[in-house]
Length: 142
Image 1 (cartoon, rainbow, N blue to C red):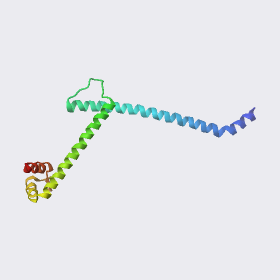
Image 2: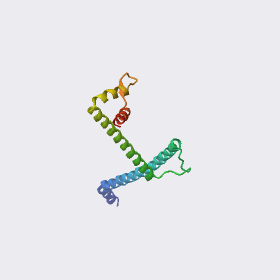
Image 3: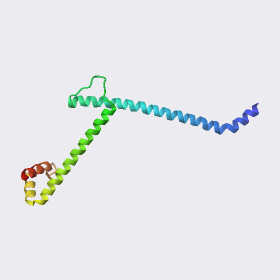
């Protein structure tokens, strides 16, 4: 019997070792997934509380105590805010291009515009305000 057991252990040693390693690996992976989910939920909860507090301070809106905005609504609001920001950037670029095209078409407007809107920053470099240039060029058109 002892001889039979020794032979069996010799032949099945690598298989048993591999199976035990696979089982440990599977349990570790499952544990990591569980920890990841738990940490994700805790992080999300902290983020929602911070955002709620921020919104209360900035905009004066208040959610009832213990109530948080659902994740889908937060995502939707974030997407809307990003879309608005992108649109504003595009509008500013379009206004800048329009002003540049107008200044290229009318060199006298460029000189008066530069003289009217020039200012110096803290480093002594001259800066011009694109918004002021755009407003003046629109006013000149009317």
